[in-house]
Length: 156
Image (cartoon, rainbow, N blue to C red; front, side, top):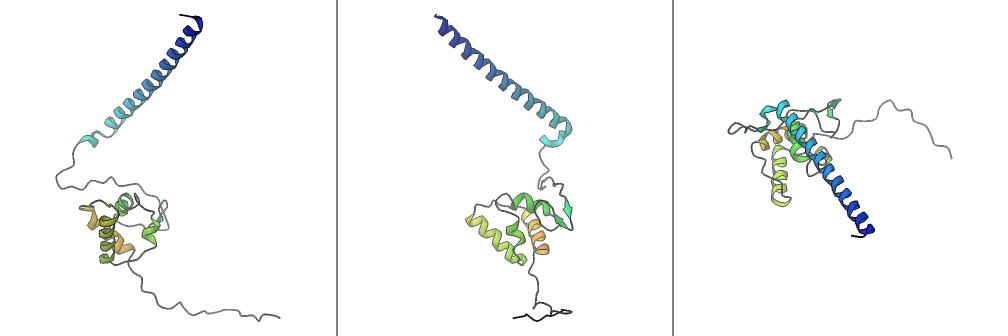
């Protein structure tokens, strides 16, 4: 081999070795993470009991009764709504709407028929419970009359 061919060959070998070192490092980190998860949560690999709905509850943070990250009202089964609804759309799509339980049911059916929403299974009833109790139609009449207003006259 000529000197420049040797140099090129050596350069390629050095690049291959660096790539292998990176791949090995990623493998080791992944293996350590897997070992940690296995020891920290040994039951993570076990199958759920028959008929049991398994959704790990998120640890939400709330301020003034609202979930900080999503803006949704605090309530039972909120974690299911976050896990199932905000995968496809913003939480604003929920909070800006109001519907009866039947109305929310129709919206879910529409999303399943037209938007590829998956079958919610046993979680559907729990999600509907949350939506119907926290985002039901509000009975509102006219605004309250203005009181204690200091009126002033506009000058020409």
